[in-house]
Image (cartoon, rainbow, N blue to C red; front, side):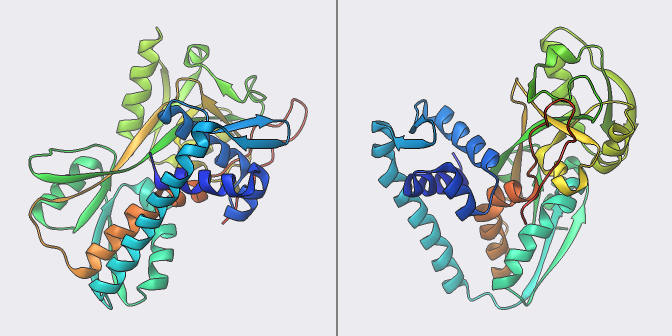
Length: 317
């Protein structure tokens, strides 16, 4: 369960409208609905009765509302107290992350952090998960954001958020008008895999094997962005994390959800029993409080257009 899900749920409960809540939160309605579905799945119950354009809280939703409001209040109070008592004015923070996190996520997180900590300098180092774990253990970075957990014996590991994996295919593909697709339907497709996404690649291959086929790897490239270029040219398909599919760069690409609901976990790692500066502690608190919303804002996309129409994407910054 993530704070952004509770924030979205409380906003919908206040407005009794997905549309009004999406406008107030400045997110797309599909992104809002996706997070509510995830929350309801985790809770094992429906929170809203949806009847046409009108929605109402279910009895379970009524019971859960004050609890969610209390959690959000405590979280906001914790961040406020932390900022007041840390007295962070300046300093340098060394952060490690993968190229995809550095490209799509960190600029948004650091932009909001800078508003409250304008004199804190942040040095960003990019690398793979193994390299980042080594950098944390050696003290080369204060903390890192990774997609594998590392060794709990030598690292403090804090789960941050789960991120959906999505299928990118060219505009003219026969599946382009679909909203979701099962892995079994992709047995005869060619794929491109970025070299900097070993965890995503391994997870996708394992999922394909579980439904009875070995994915055909036609190309390997250096990054998520170059993989999207291969897709635009109708050379292959690609499975990419949601953050890599921000809409302004998706011209010529259609994005489908995968029925098996593949995802990757982002975690924050730091050395056990290692002291941190006030600036580093403040940035860690900001990342923990803001990462889910930053993921949503950095990667919103439109559903596939009906057959015969152009695919249009939109993004809210």
